Length: 141
Image 1 (tube, helix red, strand yellow):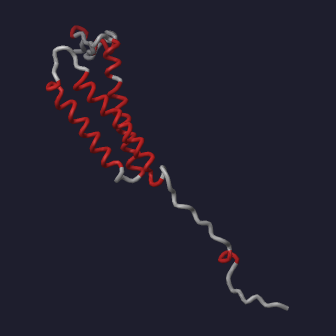
Image 2 (cartoon, rainbow, N blue to C red):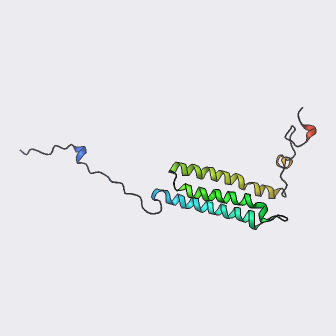
Image 3 (cartoon, rainbow, N blue to C red):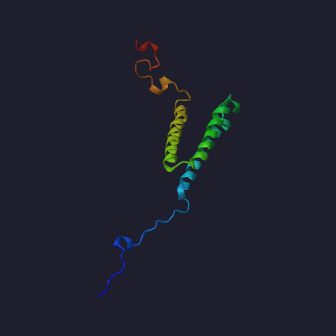
């Protein structure tokens, strides 16, 4: 009769599974960071074109100095910071920035649809009664 001298339990003798360290474009979210920076680049180019190249008649690039420089500088700071954030923080930053871009981007097509005239009467269609209808005679007392 043979005696087993090995005192290890079955759980200790099972082979362990080692998970490989990620390599390539998805290592530590670098793929996400590249996409985020590319999107910021597209938005930055749009801001520069809108503020300095495609000007309305009667305006100069100096009239848009702050409204063109500040967003581009903010996008540059966000591109530099996104690589230092944890995954959840970077995703939150992308979500908030994306929502702001969508909300800000809907103003230009909406303005173009109404001939560049955007006021409360145009937005509401002149309907309704009350202080927000645009008609002071209909305003509530």
